[in-house]
Length: 173
Image 1 (spheres, rainbow, N blue to C red):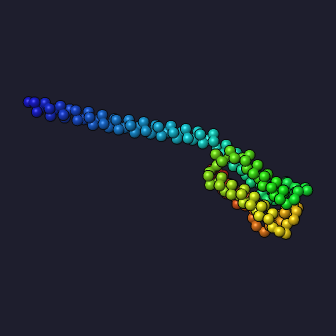
Image 2 (image 1 turned 90 degrees about the vertical axis):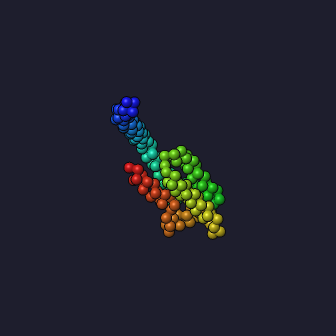
Image 3 (image 1 turned 180 degrees about the horizontal axis):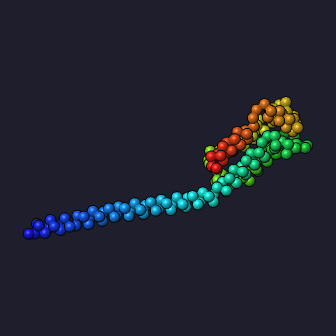
């Protein structure tokens, strides 16, 4: 009789164990789905509040690229009575100051976009310095004139960076 009682006990407990296992499994799935849903809602809320900040960062960097574009910076900063070395340093210093003023914007941008902007800045300064090293340039006015003339023949580095920023903003929106 002992074996029969054990068999009856086992057949009685088996459905309860199956139901308990299934209930535990479904409860675990439900908790995991609720956690995913909460994370999704929190991420969506954070994105909604961060989007204006990100767009503002892209706007500021667009303004930066426009301000350091060769044509605009050369028209904005006149050579007055400086020699070519002083004028080149003034232009490079102005670009660096503009860049440092906007350093915090990188936290809202992709690393690739920030690198494109830094490359455009460095290329612009490089063009100014390289042009200033030419022997046929003897004054700040001549340096300005040669850079503006070269600008007509080739695209400014800031133009490519501006296009990249615009493309990235289109992908965000």
